Length: 339
Ligand code: NAD
Ligand code: DAU
Image 1: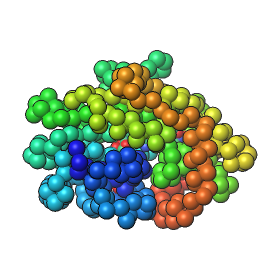
Image 2 (image 1 turned 90 degrees about the horizontal axis):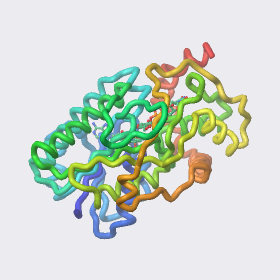
Image 3 (image 1 turned 90 degrees about the vertical axis):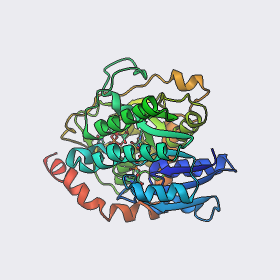
């Protein structure tokens, strides 16, 4: 493993992972391959821009010619696939792009990995493929019961990864990560949306009763878990990757407000997300047996994240005043008026 193609490398977790690989593995060459959709941002990779072991290639994972060229040109031996349409609410508004990237794109990547006989293919998946669990914890062998177009498309891509291992013997590994937060997360996701809205004294649109539970994972811990599974995970295996920080949305919201010194009156209950999963929770014993454990506590990591958004308005203000405005109006306009 020397020349790694990180697809979706200009997104939130992908860009954090590019930095992680370059820092932890001085002999690796890393190519970030990204279509630069609304969520991709080269500013996420500014810190590694001058690193000689790093390259950026603009391309679609569903474009086999562009992909083949990148693999050949950079002598790629490993793919870590972060590229995806990643936001549940957008998948409810317009599922098309989710099928294109998360299903078809994953298939095209797998074909390329097979054709070029790559050493390893890592699929970055999500705990949402299991659906919702009222109590207890999902294990890797549990059935997949995705409930949104996003999670269904991620499950589709992931099952194709399984098939390429079983049918063609491709050396694959899958991680199913839980709700991730940290620097460079596009402000459509709840943590950066609520942090940046609160900084501006704007309302925080909390869906439904706010009692849904997510298992929060700091982005650096997500990266270290992917790193371990990539290097040490068994071929064809799936690993749950959760922070072990179950919190109700209302409590996450109140924590963010407390860290910013803002009042709870900014919380605005609004109409719920259709098909909203009530609770996600993972049993991560399999990955922990390989030696992984999260380094961050939830409150400390959220404080770090809040501080980052306070200090990096140069990063998020242009996003919130661009494409995001039309999306925000479509997603929240009526909800906020009605609320
Ligand atoms: P993100 O939306 O921030 O980044 C996705 C990146 O993929 C963007 O840079 C985008 O430009 C790129 N992309 C989209 N379509 C593409 C295409 N067709 N070809 C090439 N590039 C394309 O997403 P994220 O939150 O960083 O998530 C990364 C991965 O991790 C996704 O696969 C997601 O399903 C998974 N995941 C995310 C979380 C989370 O909480 N954010 C948790 C578990 C798993
Ligand atoms: O669990 C892993 C998944 O976590 C990833 O696979 C997805 O890519 C990622 O987007 C995330 O999905 P969620 O739907 O859980 O994340 P989101 O930030 O959109 O929402 C988190 C919770 O907050 C969820 O219960 C919905 C709620 N929420 C969200 C938004 C955007 C609100 O109450 N108000 C909001 O405005």
